[in-house]
Amino acid sequence: MSTELTELDILYSPSRWSKRFPGDVVVEKHIELITKCSDEIRNELKSDLYVAYGTGKREVIDIYGTDLDEGGIYLSGHSAGGQLIAALFERFIPSLPQEDQSLFKAAFLLCGIYDLVPLINTKTNILCRLNEQSAKIASPLHMRLSSAVETIFYVVVAEHDSPAFVDSGKKMHEYLLSLGIGSNYVFIKNVDHFDVIEKLIEEDYELTRLIIDVIKKNSL
Image (tube, rainbow, N blue to C red; front, side, top):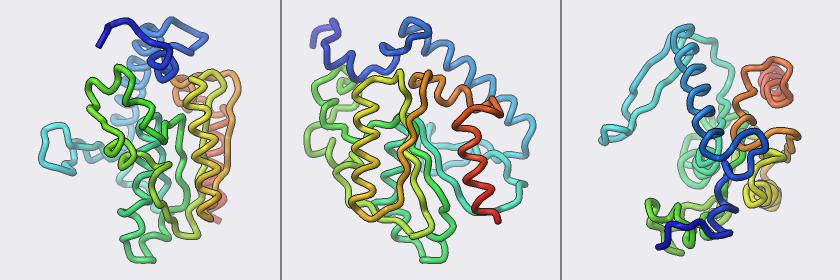
């Protein structure tokens, strides 16, 4: 495969659509900020670090705020994380007892890509090694999702994200509704694929307020 980027490669490269910095710079700055914020939160909250969820060396997660009051479960995933959060509602969450399913109050899907089939013909697929069948299996838009009545989805897209990601978010929202799952489509202006979550450190940021309001509403 040629090293030159095609139009499809660019379309599915969110860093190419940022209006703040060139692609390589916006990614570098994003990593720096997220790492810094993660370190600060890790030092402020009681946490369980490097909790294994598989057998691989990298199959670990950090659980922050283990001493905080329980008030339901709120899921959130950004970019590929949005795809993974949505996929939980295909088999894992529906397999839980109804009482446990009811703990999942909301799911925030942030700038995800929910149909991986177009990635087959991009350079991303050099590492992913998807074919049409495996791409569909991993794509929430090709899954039969189900959710407890209590779980409400918030499908978030950024104005300055790749048009492919914005379109995927719209389709995901519409698909959830077609399945009878509660969903809200949230279009956030003046942010890109990266600062849509970077700005969550700001108390007056639209998405910060939304998440806090949803949690407060469910705590009443």
